[in-house]
Structures are given as structure tokens and as C-alpha cells.
Length: 249
Image (tube, rainbow, N blue to C red):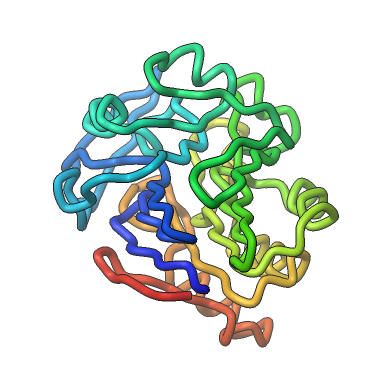
């Protein structure tokens, strides 16, 4: 059994595993400015997939609802059409509807899959007071590869905690070393070097990067990531998709 993944752009991808269809962090808005507090995040690429092109999914895996590069205006509208959105407890309280909040290490069933929420930190130590709660997910099922979806996590130490509990086969790592004026420009997601370290820690056979292009605040794009994996001798693990591209992993 394999994971089917179709990359739309940013953090958004369709996952097909064990007969279950999932969507990560839905973003469908066109390029343009997205104000967030006193800052503005700039989207630079069209999404490859529209809501209609994605079609029916069994659930959305939403790392967090606070930032428009993970849940934009059309993404919020899309949530009303899906049977289940898994997110942090605070996110579920804000979103309502079909959202369900999961504390770290809590699990729920979606078809043949067990979805376990795992910890994530959106920036350096102490970042949660400004960036808010974020979650990742681990997908498991009988006879299926174990899949880790990192969400907007910048902490390799948390990846070590996850690796201590799960033998991960496929890692979907939100990379790009996102940087804003917060925390003096410290990375808010994994740098390329951190993504390499996370791949080593997890022992994942395949790594599919997400959320490393399409927004102006990413400081390290696909080529930087590719070079880091090549330098580490891990190029054979990397599955680097173009927007709209599908792969069986």
C-alpha cells in the first residue's frame, strides 16, 4: 500500500491512504496581500487545484487556523463543505462547525486510519505565546505506511519526541524556513538543514516537503532544500513535487 499525494501549493495537498482522502491546510485564494495584525503576508503563486478539482475528502488536517498562509478566506469557506476538520482544541473552539480539537497524542478514527495529533512549535522556544497553538499529525493503519504531517513546526526536538513513539515511513515536512519580523527573524518552520535532521531522526524512507514556496516569507525554497538533502547523502529520500503534480510514495 502506498500514499498518494497531489500537491496544490503552499501547505495544501490531497492525501490518499487506505481508501481515505484527506486535505492538508486548505488555501485557495489568488496571489496577493494577506494582512495579519500589523504584518502583511504576500502570496506569490496561484493554487494548482481548486476546491472543485479536489472534490470530496473525508477530513481536513489543519495545523492551525490563525494564519492565512495555512487557512485563507476560501479555505475557511471550504471547511463548511467537509465532514470533519481536525485541528488544535483552541482552533476547534474558534472554527466551530465540523471541527474537532485534538490535544497532543490524542487519536481519532477516520475510516481505516487512526489520526494522532502530535506536538508542533511554530517558531523558537516560547513562540506559542505569539504564534498560537499548532499541531502535526501521524497517520497509521493496518498494512499501511505510517505518515507524519509536521504542520508548521520548527522544532527538531519535538520531532525526536514523535520518533520515539512512531516508526515513520513517510514524512511530510513543512519547510521553507518561514521568517517574519517576529522573534528577530528566527525561522518559524523547519530550515532546510533542520528538515535534513528531521529526516535522519525519523528514519523516514521518503520525505515530501510542503509549504516552502508560494509565499514571500519563505526564506529557503525548493532548490535550497534539494541541495541540503544532496549534501547529506539523502537525495534518494526526497520527493520534491511541483504544484499540481501527483506521486505515489
